[in-house]
Image (cartoon, rainbow, N blue to C red; front, top):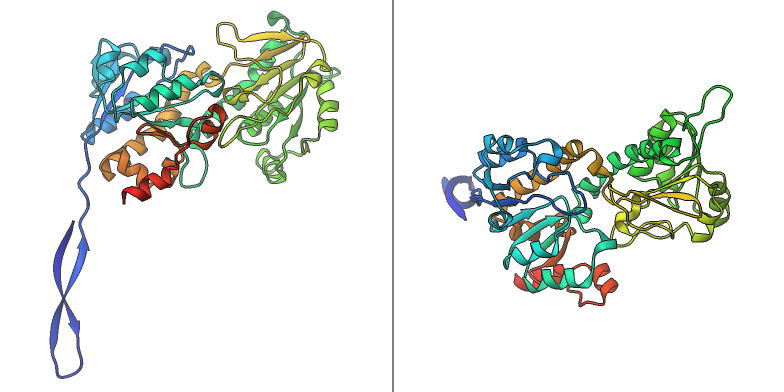
Length: 407
């Protein structure tokens, strides 16, 4: 929409002043969003995607939010907190799934997909180890637009939700490892940092990204000996600079890695893939040569895991033993501290919702914002993530081509 104005311009001497029409942009009127927050019932999920504080901001900007009763209890948020923020409280999930935009902190369950309607938007994680072809087919048949937490980018070309959860997971992974090294959890009964006269534990970290950096920082803070592996020299340099300590670093050479794993008390898997499954860098043979009672924390399990022996576990039964090595492979580690994690997710999602409203809805926002577009894996029934199409042998549709053809 444009508005005409008249502006004087200068002409040649003796000819006076004439006027010329110019165009001034007028701000587009934003749209009101209808957002639904269901109660999480899968993956022992305790997080909630929008906190009462964020919902209050959305309500004050003219949007409608409906929250299923009990949705925030896992994060110690109660129905009264949400209602006081202006949200509607629904007694059952079916009322929530009438919303145009559904936001979840866990993947959709099969029965939840059946409650969705065409042209709805779902923003949630996808756990690759649990993902199957039927899940994608159901979303596609419903003509749903689906965005994955893991793939949404920001203007700095990073993954903001992944980064926040990675900071939590990095810190928590070392604390979890310390628990399972203790005798109370069938560990070897050693103190991670040792004491005077008793050497500390050896910690091997695979990946020098955010998880690796925060895991290394926490392990060093507790007094452990830390060794970090990554194939990116830049990431290794950045890690050393950021933690302010000269730790052992190496590229992922199978010989060197196997040698350090044989002496490790703790191994942290922290390798993240930007597009698909995490690469397996530790073979079953390497695990079999590790010390009995040592601990593996595979933070990469939400993308399939970077240890060949990893299998998805739960908070109820978080560990299993293979070759006498304790494996902790819970995909949602951040759910151990759900209030912190909920605030972190909400801090990323809320600005996206506000900006989508300014653009006139999520469809127009996705067309305009290439970073948000990166998070879309199903668009109105078309599978737009190349890695998922290759993984399940499904037809891939380029999202950029969809938008180009609609212009």
